[in-house]
Length: 147
Length: 309
Image (cartoon, rainbow over all chains, first blue to last red; front, side):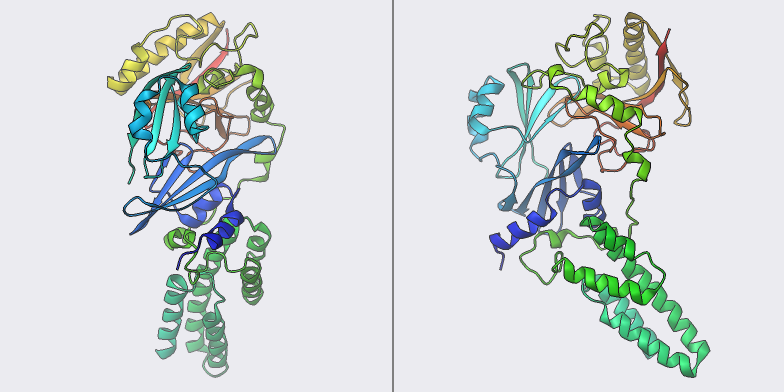
């Protein structure tokens, strides 16, 4: 029987571990999506979020958050992350400004891109959300269900 | 044959079921091999060979695991030559980690993702010099992480291209008004490079980017030339870079990315407005941007060298 408390304790032990070291334990991810690495087995998905952490004079990606989804994309457990609620997609069209979106849903889980930029979020129902923006204007919101 | 079967079973079980539990069966097998050794040297020889092989597999997995959980000291202890000492170190370390990643713990979801195959991989550990603070990457690091060069929302600031050009800000010292793009420094904004990344052939992408890079270099009083391989060693005053593109990055569309060769021969890069890093998408140090894990950026355009005119 799965228990939240035990899982929280285990997560605290590996939180902050480097991406390289975790890859040596879990193997190559099913896919990498910028700061996120996605693993899958027969009936479950594990999504790890890495954050660049200062180490000496450089930074390296270290584990910040972890989320587990079952095969129906229901979140089983998450640690170190506030997932975006499922109603996001129904409400997203209302948002025209990045600042308003962040005020409603919180800081993005990642920022990506070299020419254009996009905020990256992970939702409760296992969708990656990309909010492409220019200055404070939202240009486009797209979803990618990696499962 | 019975003993051979025993060794085989022990190995299989240790791989499938007892990866991180004390390997009593192997220790027991060693005792049995030792007993046989006293009566039949030839027969014992083959068993000892198999045992060594079994132990090496086990130790390799254990080493990967302990490096994985950051216990480098224990991982190093496993490198010793005395097999019994290694097993003892392994046992102590397992007790120390309190059964983390023990598959008998049904509450450990992480455990369900440990790949047996991956544990055979020799974990790579960065050479010591990678953390030296005397390298150009680390000298540049401070410049490229100053808050004054970024807008509050991080919409603008030095990106991979600025990092490749060695410019944390505009040449006049002011912060970038947006993230630099091909043509930014020469004031020749165009959608052409974006269009070429999305629809153009590799040759078209290359010629388009080179055209804009040339204009930028001229505006900056620099010049650039292409080099054929990663083996090129930049001379004093030269900066070696590599350009890659993607036709469709999730959530973004077409995009480009640059890498910079550091004095130590490894490469670093700066993904967007995040901090410069020496690691690729798999968290490995970058020996060659052509072969490293670049994620969506699958089109390798080329290696270039920038220098003052």
